[in-house]
Image 1 (cartoon, rainbow, N blue to C red):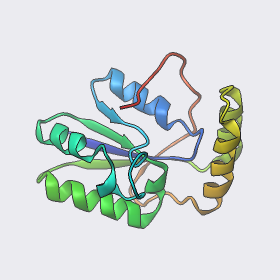
Image 2 (tube, one colour):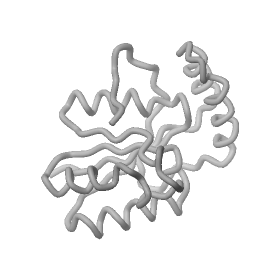
Image 3 (cartoon, one colour):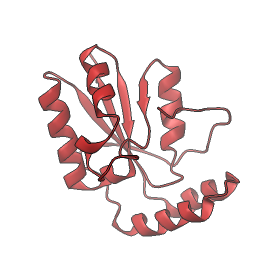
Image 4 (cartoon, rainbow, N blue to C red):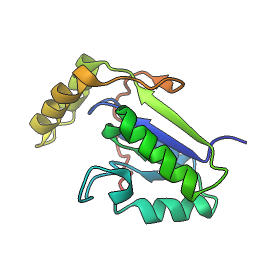
Length: 151
């Protein structure tokens, strides 16, 4: 049996949302920008936690993405909570490569009003972005048109 949850990390513009869109089309429940909207940038504080745990306990396959997963502390926290809350859970990490020029090109191609913010995050995170051991490493993806995945 494959994994029940895929945890995704990548720089802005790397293709996290595009990957999640593809997984969604294959029947996965998607939790993009997982920590957004929480009072702190910690896994347990996400307003999406209850829905994620409930879905996993009900047997749904879930894909969870957050830029913060590149940090060891963040990965350990996520794994610990998920494995504690859902015994027998099988999880897999997928990381996008650290290719800042390709990410910047994708950000610029989106024509969003917030692209300067995204470029700032890219410059902030790319120097310290490290891929976890035993993670699947993916190349930077180009955005797919007409794909909305936000939960």
